[in-house]
Figure 1 (cartoon, protein in one colour):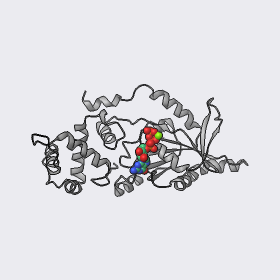
Figure 2 (tube, protein in one colour; figure 1 turned 180 degrees about the horizontal axis):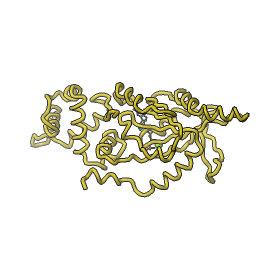
Figure 3 (cartoon, helix red, strand yellow; figure 1 turned 135 degrees about the vertical axis):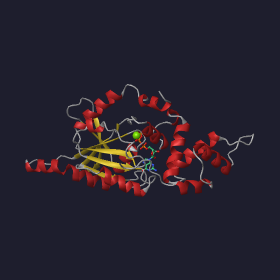
Figure 4 (cartoon, protein in one colour; figure 1 turned 30 degrees about the horizontal axis):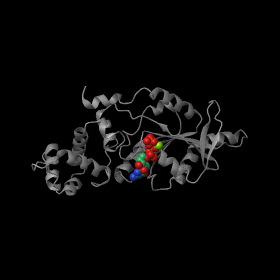
Length: 285
Ligand SMILES: Nc1nc2c(ncn2[C@@H]2O[C@H](COP(=O)(O)OP(=O)(O)OP(=O)(O)O)[C@@H](O)[C@H]2O)c(=O)[nH]1
Ligand SMILES: [Mg+2]
């Protein structure tokens, strides 16, 4: 088994329990707000959500769009749109996303609301649950939607424990605890993309595998920006790229050889802080 394949099992046993609990909570909401990372809209999704919430209307937030390639984000928005699913690219950290999300939620909940009206009932508020893989921005999304609103608690029918709802608008409530989905790494490149964007801890995968994956992708898709950033000529493969960057940046050890570890760590840092530009690490099929 290779180093990379080991990570398929990196998440221990509480997954089943967490999923059971989430499934219970999902029953009580009108819709799911699924937070993904706009840089990796495929790898930051967990397809198990379809089983946890079959048929639930969904808002897919391609979050951190300030870090992603705008053209690719547009392509992903189109590629992911489906019936009962509204895809919106956002920067939950710096934008007030409340109105956009509220509008989408009203559209998705409309059939249920109209059904209640037809039956002569007063429509009940729209309830939504935020879900996503670790670090996707779930808490940031909840904060942005519910800014300055007070959390209210309500008895949740069918479940004994109290569930807290956050009032985002008169008729729009969010569950205050986000559902954590675990990334599904059934392909080593998914793991590598999760590592590049910081969704999984750096120690989980070998640094060399992460950096070499990143360098090949950059050379293939963002060559000019990459070469320009480090003032280097086109390298002959990964090892040569590391040497050229090290020489160019003066990352040398005492003997004068390139300090490769320093180059690699620096490269990852540059990628995560958009020093090479706004990069999306996967394309829609
Ligand atoms: N640049 C940028 N950073 C963001 C955005 N949204 C969230 N972040 C940052 O991403 C990191 C993770 O955000 P959280 O909201 O804590 O993510 P989470 O999904 O709640 O993470 P866990 O609770 O660990 O599962 C934080 O450092 C946020 O500031 C965004 O739209 N743009
Ligand atoms: Mg959180």
